Length: 215
Ligand code: 3PG
Image (cartoon, rainbow, N blue to C red; front, side, top):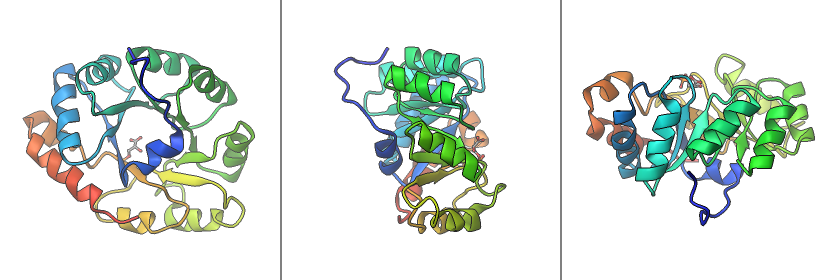
């Protein structure tokens, strides 16, 4: 459970903590704590654990309980019920692949900062109507990538994005150079093979390299 003395967090602060938010998929709760420690050793503490596996909530709980330097969040939050479950497990922020007003209101009721997923102008307008202006652009590369973000700078100059989807060590810097990009998200910091081997040093190195990316 979340420590009640934990200070409030904003979606903007989640995005600005480091250049990259790792998108994490865990099938084994025993990997959660060493993985979180490996990422923190490399300088990344905002950790998005996706609700895509049966173990995801247990992993969030383990990190929240055992790794006080981590700020664990839930990804793939698709419903109000997901948000409640993530919050109960100790998630301190939520990331969603799309946006609904019901999800936005539930997160607000829980004081759970939400990075809502958008891919079109109408979705940005809907999220803005509900008070959100720090948004995830998903799936970023597939939905228009750099050109789309540049096009949004005019009409949506007051919005900042965390593009996610198709971003990796080789193209992250191009996204981070845009003024409306606060950070990027991606799974490349936690490769499935390194995770399976328990190669925590490799993951720390990837996190360290990600922290050196310039915004
Ligand atoms: C996802 O939801 O899977 C994330 O956007 C990660 O995408 P990536 O694997 O392309 O980084």
